[in-house]
Image (cartoon, rainbow, N blue to C red; front, side, top):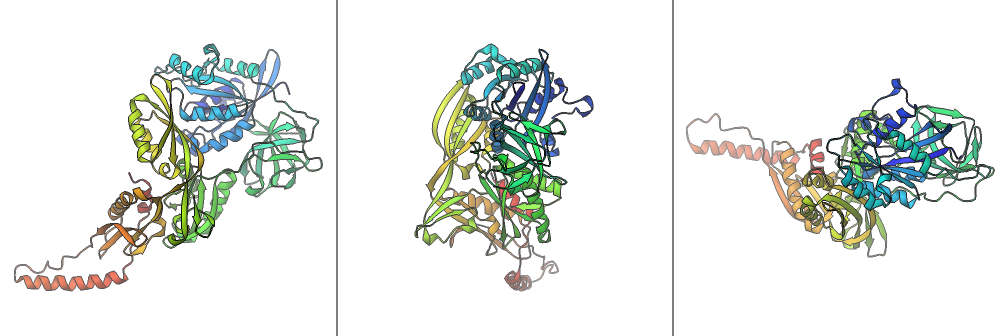
Length: 595
């Protein structure tokens, strides 16, 4: 065990984690020239295309130092705030972490958030200054920020470059010197934590685990602590570039188990794996159910594809434990699913994966958060979409989720960032200067206000410099109203939304204007209205497409023209009574991108 080191790489998005991981794999000879490509561990096409890590990836490296052979288990983690659940699971399986900071950008919000996660788990932190080969690198300034955040000595910060391979040897020797070997007793009953799972269409679910105590052998009868399901270990092994089967794994090892599990619900990430006959006494601490932050309806464009969509969403859930879904139906869109996501990027990624991996073209409804409704009868109801809201007469109060948000910004954009947060009903809790020109702002914000376009607006007003991170704090009382959109007098439930009373008129006006641009003209006038209960708060009208019936009247008496127009008017009126309005798919999408 003293030759095992388990560590993860944590950083803000786009600070060069995956590139640095490539150099470590190359230097230790884990990846040969023929397998070498950029972002070796990002095996999803979408990850490579967008240059982001979506899933955590584990791999084992062998490294020789002072004639001793060390086993280094590396876990590369995502940097985006939407995937912080993945990071927390990976951190629980490690004893140390490489904290990567971009020398050109300095410390950002997600760096601090992930660092606190690591410190809470008592991990040994090794600070690394990446992208030192860039002309715009500011090593002295960023080192000051790291020392202020972490303490320690300036000379302990490793200067490195994932692109050129500078500093890789220093990183490896520091991992061996500073990160403690795992503790545990190989003779005790088996106690292993599941930190990830992937789905293989031939072999079922493959669970990745780290052994805290005990030993696991091929063919052992094992059980999961939380789900209480038991299986036989058909194959166990370690995670090299390809999986490598082993006869046994002991305390401190990171590996995988294949036991023919077909149901995603049976493997909970964070669960404890133990022997069936000789179980451990307690589960490993830190297990928590993932809570979706954002809900949206996903519907097939063609209603006949409903079963295909169900199959696609189930398969995606096997790969992504944080996706939740339940069936629902809509008058406008037919049958579909109400899905729970961790954030807007997560929702976008799922949509993209449905399209690429399963060829499913879907409509996504306006995303919203979950609210708690207290009724006059003393009941408490959780509402995930506006149509689930009970009758306004029986509602005592509505509680909405609030978040603790940390924003790190250049002081140049300080005022604009504060204005944006005020617009979104934010309350400033704390401000802290990280350096002379960088400030960290802490805000209380309603989650519903940030799910639409907050992140995009923050990036545009700060020219990409500001970074943002959040955690759910609590539920608070709010003045919320349900706003319906009526097209030609018919309610379109997919466009209904729950919003704050103060923003209702403004949003209603914008939505009716936008829809009047996007819905094609028909043979009759189409009124588009925004309503709260029976009160109309905004209206736009789409003019009818008219045939020029007076074209044949050149010259002559005006009464002839009037007669023809009156006749046309009667026909239009009759048509309107039976007319159906076609709403194109981009109308649903455009509402998400309202400025």
